[in-house]
Amino acid sequence: MELNNNQDTKKEKKFPFLKKLEIMIEEAKLEDAKKSKMKRVHKRGSSQIAKKMGEEAVEMVIASEQDNDENFLEESADVFFYYLMALHDRGYELKDVLEILKKRHK
Image 1 (spheres, rainbow, N blue to C red):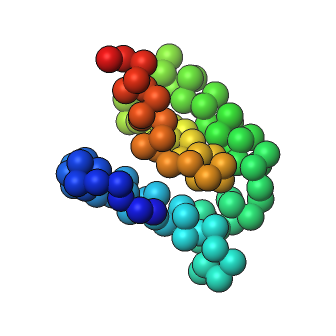
Image 2: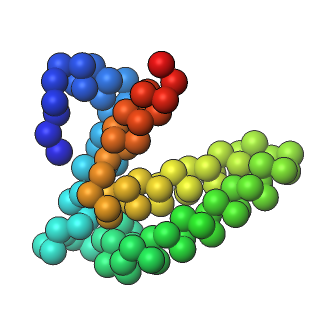
């Protein structure tokens, strides 16, 4: 993952784990990557990543209707994780989606 400019570097300093997570997801796609949850998910393919993201999204929707903030946040994290996996599986990064949102909400 290459940084485009100094502004990207400043943004990443605010959320260093997010950048690290995206790097870990990319590395898990490599043939010689060590065994991990990300590697197993990636090897299952795009349709399985999408299916898992959908399952987690349903769980998040159910959790959003309950009075348990911790469970809601846990399910939200699961959805976000599989969302990132799906993005990277297609060759994109979170910043690609954020750029679209930025353009939409000027």
